Image 1 (cartoon, rainbow, N blue to C red):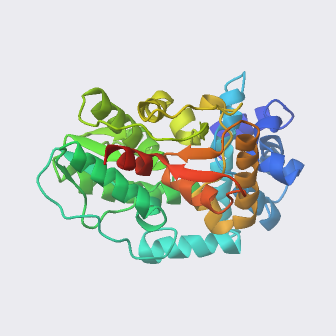
Image 2 (spheres, rainbow, N blue to C red):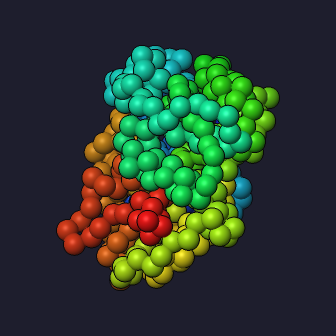
Image 3 (cartoon, rainbow, N blue to C red):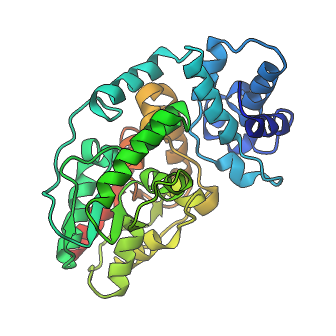
Length: 360
């Protein structure tokens, strides 16, 4: 049912307790079945003759694919490998949970997880820089997209955006695995970007950025342009003197490292550099950088909002263990997830909005 690679990973994880204390879902639900170990055990049982059923399929989707388990594994195993393949099996066996199927139906109709038409953020024009907005920023964090584009204009950067921006494919990949349909979606996006002839692609959502830099190349459809994250690009403009933010009056603030930026790209300092340039003193949470606890994702929120509300509250609890009264985020998905759980007396700010204000 799953590949030999996934089977080896599942067998290695099924009796191991090493990462259970780091799983954001397991920590909040308190259910053993929500740990990577339990998912590995279930799939190893299936490989030994147990029937893969609807309950098992649902368990495979109760995961944020945040890689906290992989990052902490002293032996180098990666539970998301077999969890993704478990989701592929759910599709093949027609066992996809109803709420997940509803999201898949929206993607089929509209191209995004919300089932909505994406707004345009400008017109295509000749430029060396293309900004890839992404579906979450376009539909649930428009404030971040608009602030980011204003910052480029303040810095004198000539940029273009795709008039009809295709999905990167990452949402579909996280739902059904790295199958042919996902590769085709990636090819459509890659071709659309390559046709522009740009030299640099600046990506707002790190989930899109990781998918473009890692999976596109693996499938032989790599982008001809350099792919950079929005935070690293703004930090380079700051160092070049093209962005000159003033000081913002703010008491201690915490910064949340989103999972794929931290554990797949290993980018930590650009956002902190930008925050420091505004004179904001950071109060780091205990779990930061590679160890950052995932607060949830937009995709997971679309089909298991109750669990994502719990993981968001869990991350806010981490903030409240510090002296910080403000949480700064730089990822559209984090903005969408955390804004619905802001505790009384706390404030959520997006980094691009703060910078836009500081540069005005």
